[in-house]
Length: 229
Image 1: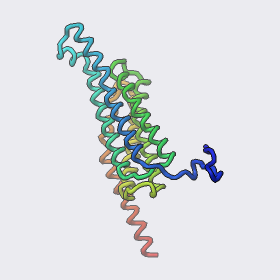
Image 2: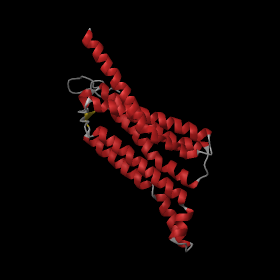
Image 3: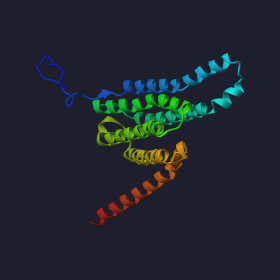
Image 4: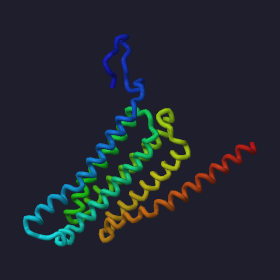
């Protein structure tokens, strides 16, 4: 979108606009994540008041609201992990472009959506749509971070991330996205397994190590061929 001309009548568009400081974006992301994590607790607070009116004890609450407590803990942990992952990337990002800002807006949308999906998980009966909305949001979040890392790889002037670290991050995001996709398919097609399909994420570490090993082997082979030429 072209902006109004400046004093010298030279229009400013997105292609020529200089990069922005990353600090305000980092602060905004931190605030959004904190609010999303806080919102997770609201359904539990409402139920506490209801149990109090019915003169039920804490044990009754824990027994009857076990699903909501589990979904709260799961989503809280997931958002915390996603935020730490995001923080590790942007800790060394110094400038952001409009494209990078919009990628983070999309990522924040997936985080803000999780409290809604979590409330469904804890209070509604399990169905395919609910699983798609919950695990699908996790998949989309991981994909957006993958695209973010790829974008940063193509724009080294925006950050101080070592190439090797960026490469490892890309491998991690590819593995996580693939596992989320498999978990989504399994959860939807096999209702009896349901959200237990997310235990596939335990394969993330071994899969990342395997891919990294293959990548290093290929790089060493290519370097050896280059030296013999």
